[in-house]
Amino acid sequence: MLKKVGIWGTGAYLPERIMTNKEFESMVDTSDEWIVTRTGIRERRVAAPEEAVSDLSAIAGARALEAAGLAPEEVDLVIVGSCTFDTYLPASACLAAWKMGARRAAAFDLETACTSFIYGCAVGAQFIATGMYRHVLVIGAEVLSKFLDYRDRNTCVLFGDGAGAALLGPVEEGGFKAFDLGADGSGGGLITVPAGGSRMPASAATLEERQHYVKMNGKEVYKFAVRVIGDASQRVLDRAGWRQEEIDMLIPHQANLRIIDSAAKKLGLSMEKVALNLDRCGNMSAASIPVALDEVVRAGKVKRGDRLLMVGFGSGLTWGSMAVEWNPGQR
Ligand SMILES: CC(C)(COP(=O)(O)OP(=O)(O)OC[C@H]1O[C@@H](n2cnc3c(N)ncnc32)[C@H](O)[C@@H]1OP(=O)(O)O)[C@@H](O)C(=O)NCCC(=O)NCCS
Image 1 (tube, rainbow, N blue to C red):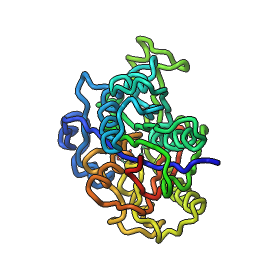
Image 2 (cartoon, helix red, strand yellow):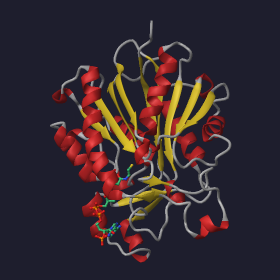
Image 3 (cartoon, rainbow, N blue to C red):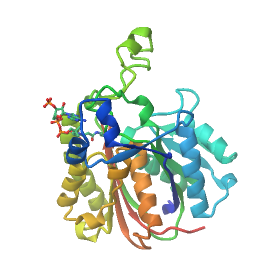
């Protein structure tokens, strides 16, 4: 018999430094007005030079454990979802687990870009459902600022740094009702960091050509996002047996306010039922959804029994959605 799984507690961490749109005006040909009207972003957080993904992860993870009332030694598995890991070797999850004091935990990284938190929850939930593990900490964390080309106005204004976490455990009722995950590698070139891997190893030439930074075809990603966010949402609602009007809160990936608007419209939701941090945080990739979740939880905007729909999309291309009946605080 598979166990039911839910979220026991959440946590988040945003780096201290706030970077406003205005600061980009001296770097590239852009304006606060363009960024706000085309994306909805006003400012974002930027990690300190010494901060990497495992540092942000450890703080957000520790806060989730505190919210769940769990000691670090009780964690069985730590999953860090990101696309801006500390290093290729070792996995950032090992470092984050160690920094948190989760000494008993297994740990691994998961990379499906902006969809990593949804994939991470789906993967983590399987371990608990089968009984292999009891407490799985899923973290979405990014330090994108170190992978941005501050000469490329198409990308540098869009992203931000941060981390969010959720402690997963068995529940008597509620919790995860359904997942929908997808991938389409034919669009792999639409958002990419071309160099530094086995396809194009780092060299003086790749550095010179600025191939170690995020490159994106914004227009094509936009079209993909609008399509997939609606489809993935509807599929998971069908699987959960929920009607659109039964959704209490939509927690979407935060890439562009116009994309979020279109998703809300498709689902017949007013914007009061949509969690937003894009204006303050930009696109934090894997961290966007768990940070937004933590914010609405701590603000008391979700209550026991509420039906939450989380939906993400990103490089890969990947997409994913999950239906969660909010039922935290179990032990
Ligand atoms: C990137 C994005 C904001 C661009 O908005 P847009 O309205 O589609 O703008 P376009 O791509 O049509 O570009 C219009 C013009 O604005 C320019 N532009 C791009 N970034 C700019 C900036 N920061 N400031 C000023 N102008 C900018 C473009 O160069 C283009 O100029 P051109 O017409 O002279 O070539 C939008 O396409 C988007 O959000 N895409 C999805 C991105 C995304 O979700 N990424 C992450 C996925 S996880």
